[in-house]
Length: 312
Image 1 (cartoon, helix red, strand yellow):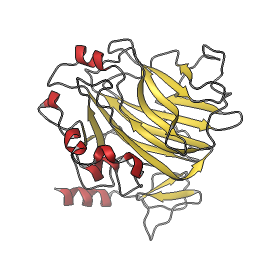
Image 2 (cartoon, helix red, strand yellow; image 1 turned 90 degrees about the vertical axis):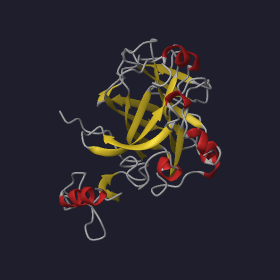
Image 3 (cartoon, helix red, strand yellow; image 1 turned 60 degrees about the vertical axis):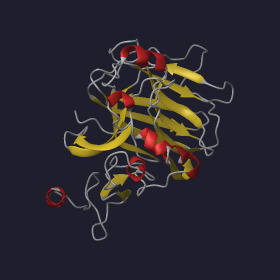
Image 4 (tube, helix red, strand yellow; image 1 turned 30 degrees about the horizontal axis):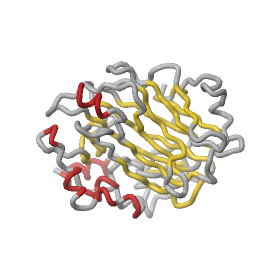
């Protein structure tokens, strides 16, 4: 079956030519257009893309260390590999709330583009302060001062957003400390969650910006995007499904998300983060043997990527 899938994929390839459009296949004999890079067999603008094409770069499925960190595409920082070593990996691969199925695994299923793909699947776990809280870091080959990040994410239809600060994606400084985080705050139910941005600034340790409308519905794929500029002035722009996240002109302490003194010299890495910051809520609302699930695919970060164009 695997051989048949590969043959079909090869038969449908559109190899790179002089077009400026992205998405063409590329290899040693088929170069990309000017300003594009051949990343994992596909022409893309931008540089230093992380996790591009989701978890397609590994042959392993399931709760496997190499598969989970997509090791072939970018190097996992040694300081953050401890949770994936034995016996920690064994513990990660057994969720007692679901007949000892993995907390985190790579699966094949229908992805955000409507076709079969590989993706990260995380099951939330009861009895923990922050749920499963599975994370994977990727570091850029060189620090940047202007970066874009994007990822597709879906939450199972039974998922509920607690009125807490749930992390989804984090941009890190050269020491791997969080500088900017994209998260979601809920209303203790299944209604759409509200994007919440945290920014570490020079004047205040943590500036918080809350969206004015809920955009993170459950049961459907969402494309989330970030654009971060160090400045001065520094700024953060966020989008969900091609729509700008609407923030107030200033937050509760009078700071604009478009005029920031960000507390770092550069942006050096990104982190997929499945922290559910309300373990007690999970224990009360999430049934045993039926854990809530989240899925990640097409995670990317780098300089010069730009926001994805809306198909409409």
